[in-house]
Structures are given as C-alpha cells and as structure tokens.
Length: 114
Image (cartoon, rainbow, N blue to C red):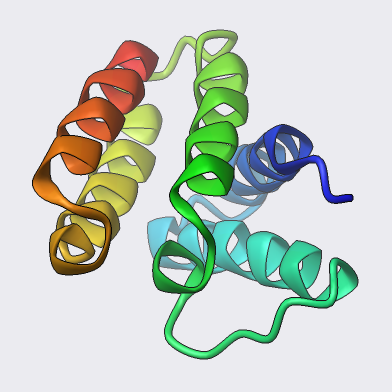
C-alpha cells in the first residue's frame, strides 16, 4: 500500500532541490509533478488525467500533509508560494470530481504551508 504522505514529502523535497539548483519555477514544478507521477506508477496506478484527478481524495489529502510538512521547514516564502499556487490551482479544477467541500478542506490544509 502506497504511503501518499511520503509521496508529498518526496515531491516537495524534489521541488525545492530543483529550484535551488536551477532557479526555474517551471522546472521545479515539473519535478514535483514527475515525482508524484512516478510514485503513482510504482503503486500500480495509471496516470490518465493528473494525480489530482486519478487519485482518491484521501490520498490527495495525505500528499498535502507531506507537502505542508516539508514547506514549513523552508524559509523562502516566494518559492513556497509558487508551489502553493500550483497545487491550489490543480485542486480547484477538480471540484466537479471531488466536490466543493473537499476542495475547501484542501485549501485550508495547503494554506498552512505559507
């Protein structure tokens, strides 16, 4: 069984490391996405529309816990804000699938990172 909290930690660490190395937000966000996709594939989950659509709400919530955990250790608000915006935009787009109440919970959870 996949540990989605760990996926969030790994993806966030990859994002922050990539940004430190490249200073390129797009490349860092691609690294974040790629790490989650790789984790999905390792768990036997086929990537179809995006992790925000392909994963159940509980798994997404666990990813966010990992993201927030890592982000709280980072002092650079601008770099955290880019990741925050990226995630919140992806989750906003899933309201039709996961519901407005779920999105509201995620929004509250992810806002703890900034």
